[in-house]
Image 1: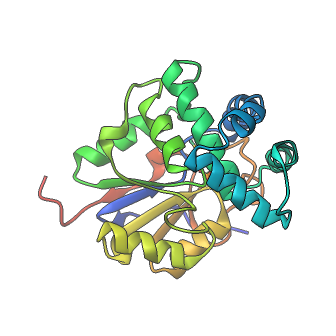
Image 2: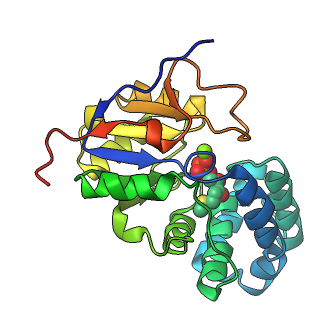
Image 3: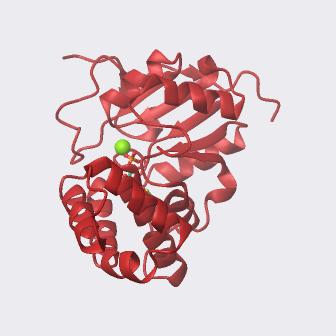
Length: 245
Ligand SMILES: CSCCC(=O)C(=O)COP(=O)(O)O
Ligand SMILES: [Mg+2]
């Protein structure tokens, strides 16, 4: 299917997906996933009393319909979800605990495609607000942006959204919730993502949407349906006619 090139977008804010959009899925799957897999057993046994861990364990039991699942059973479920890259909220919450500690310890440094950081800085300097909306938990997102090879990028960000505070990424209601939370009208928000289902949901909520198609990413061959598309952030033209900066 032929898809249109990305037109110029007159918006107040850009909302970023991470995996497949700002950053390589291969890095997440090859570096971050093994890091969390190796630490789940200890987290679920030694720290089950911590509120975030207890809540995630309860969510796993509910999602699987296994009210009596013990730590070993929950670990098995988490690892199966990892194998299929399932974006389950409790998996993402627990990964957020493990990864944010790994970043703080210096074990991990995040990954961004070369075009991303210069473009984020340029958009921010031009008066655009930048937000993240990822399946990765808010604490994982914060650690990801704080520990980039280019240094701490969190000062560029105005807010972080995940499936816990906004809802599922393929549901238009989540995008309406984010618009309400940011105070930016839907028609002044641009969402960048690699997944057509997410772009569909953003568009259904009245947002601008551009599919980011990077060679080697899982959705590269499938494409982004009839959405405008870009191979890098340099191909995305954003201007903010309302900016005073
Ligand atoms: C720092 S978040 C790590 C990536 C991750 O776990 C994830 O699920 C990202 O999914 P996305 O919605 O950004 O495609
Ligand atoms: Mg993605």
